[in-house]
Length: 171
Image (cartoon, rainbow, N blue to C red):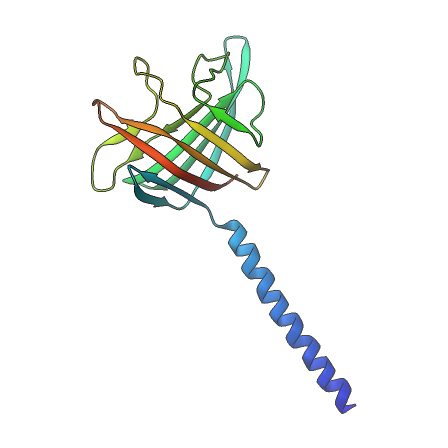
């Protein structure tokens, strides 16, 4: 009976530790982030969500996914639009969505902390900056990926290089 009791306690302890590990793994999977280097300086944001919708452009339907991260006054994001549903793939600004005429990939609304300056990668009349957004994983719970390109100051000519961009956003 003594050995049974010791074995039972050992089993319960093992289950408790295993359960804690699983909770930790599940919590880790739920974390969202958006990181990038802007002109070599690391910028990090949390609270990332994907806003997905379908919209009509004339007679054609297109799909839009916006990755929105951060908090008021300190935020960043990216967007992909395509005539087919968004999936794990690479989207480039040099490829236009045939329904909208817009680049398939763009970085948008990077607001420099402590500043009113807002940077985006595309606006009508600007040169087309190379943007690459790759969804490495895309499912009903979250999306992960990498991105790079250039951002330009709205109302100005300053251009900044974005490198080593990566994200995990919740659906």
